Amino acid sequence: MNKKVINSVNAPAPIGPYNQAIEINGLVFISGQVALIPGTNTIMMDSIEQETEQVMKNLQAILMEAELSFEHVVKTSIFLSNMDYFADVNTIYANYFSANFPARETVQVAGLPRGVNVEISMIAAR
Image 1 (cartoon, helix red, strand yellow):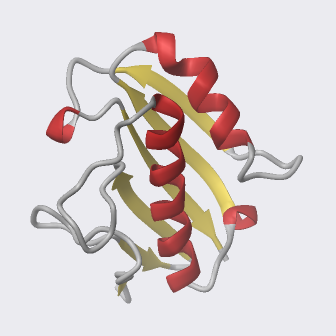
Image 2: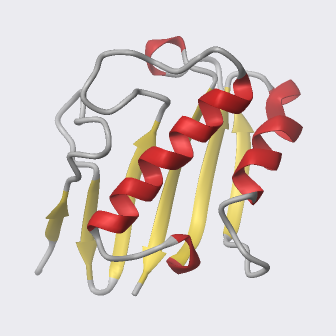
């Protein structure tokens, strides 16, 4: 097995025993990202829109570290603290993709790390 660890200084450092992303056989598995501002311990939670924007910026930084873009994303998972946020999150999320959207699920969960409202993970392909 030839797996490659991908970590970007432009995205939040992992807060547990995991990496930001792992690449294997041309697939890049990106760990769930929350609205932590890179290099700080601050979470962007002024609004669900700003929170989602920060999550997407964190994901973008990891994709860029892997020399990929959102066009390479084939699957996303969105976890929300409340489905009432669905439309607002969807609006911000859609701004990062062109017409060829990835496969996706969006689920409401009982809780997310550090009390955030949105977490997104991705799978990208070379």
